[in-house]
Length: 103
Image (cartoon, rainbow, N blue to C red; front, top):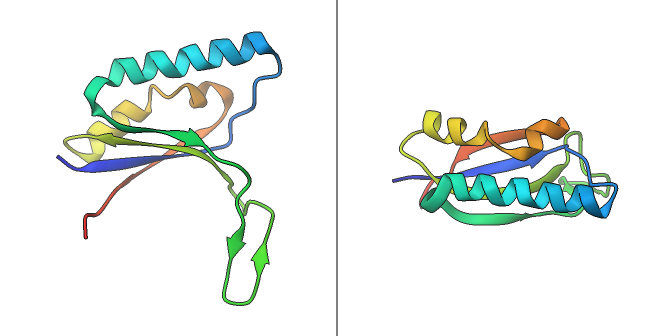
């Protein structure tokens, strides 16, 4: 069964300790709902840098990555269905779903 990466963009950081606890509980529940399909729960990431042939921009790019998760699914459609439950979507973020190609 293929693996897919969920690349998170946007969303917002919790403003209070209570919001942080509620957010963490929502993520834990989502992971629980996906069960064994979660190959790597991933992590949030810090501000990215964009490297091109002539420069390094320290601004996160036009759509900064905010985290990732790796899941196992039967198809891209099945992975997208799983992504629809992501708590980040409620905070205005998006989830980019892409197959991981084994080399």
